Image (tube, rainbow, N blue to C red; front, side):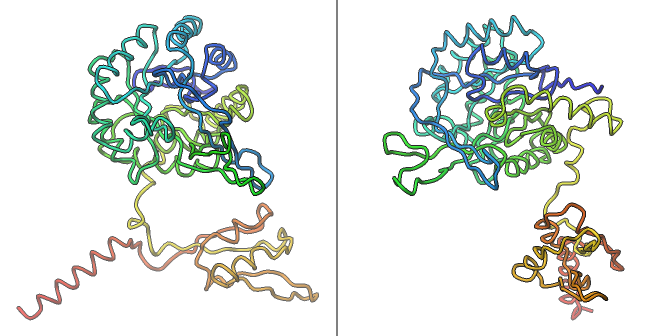
Length: 429
């Protein structure tokens, strides 16, 4: 069994699986049930001034027979009194001293407000603080959440205010509703953040009811944009985690969030630089016991690789992640159809003929039946045929050895510029 313990900026946890600040961490009862199920940590549902929530609150996208492919909510921070939450945090930490409890916080962008809530929360024994600069609805309209998180100067200033009084590690939770998330991540670091967490939810409207014309969800016939999460946002989250992990200016641990539904998703986030992960939608969909499969799957994966501790895989894929201009233009792969496996459904041919590069032919065999074959000299290796193919192993993407040396766009442009300079200097000789 591999060692699954992590330490995120001084916050220890028996495993990298935490519950994110959300409905599953709204009470001591829930967090204690989660710890009993095996979760290593929990970020308590965001604390702040008393809030009134609405009904209804949630909506989801189902796609291709899969329920909850994407999830939307218009719920705000906790609507339970701060004193009640603090008492339950104290009781939960006393009962589970080895599990990580992080308090998510959100208040007005005022120094005294941050100082007050930090002191009160740390007095009950939390292991760390997570500053919620990401909520895209409700709170943003009040100058908090993503309204602060989209402005690097506000992120830096409020992080600094918290660090003035905080005695525990400070994690800054970032909004994805911004052009360049590294700008706010760097601002958090400049403000003294011990770690960052990302992503929070994405601005979204899940749909419109075609009978009533109401938005989904709606409150008495009125709707509002909400926060989007769940499996559908994983690629967006993974990219933003990777961008922060590879930035030389963001040298703090990362807590990865966004569409993590199983141990495989978690490993991807760890490889791309996250020290640990936070989960919400999957727990809401399937319950707390999904963590059992996550722990078992991660253990088996590490054992199969001969890796003794989960910390050994953190960031291992970051050096492989770069900009388009650094990719080898002379690298080539082509599609190859395995006729003994192919069921002749023709999906690859249709996809290639209509929307790609027209390089798959239907040819007759000796018996008069037809089979599919790729004209490899015309194949650009786009992967579309293998993506739409419904049969595992029917199409392989094969590397073609190139006679040309590796050449990136950046190298090509540099060579062209040098050539232009030399030509310009020729009249001087």
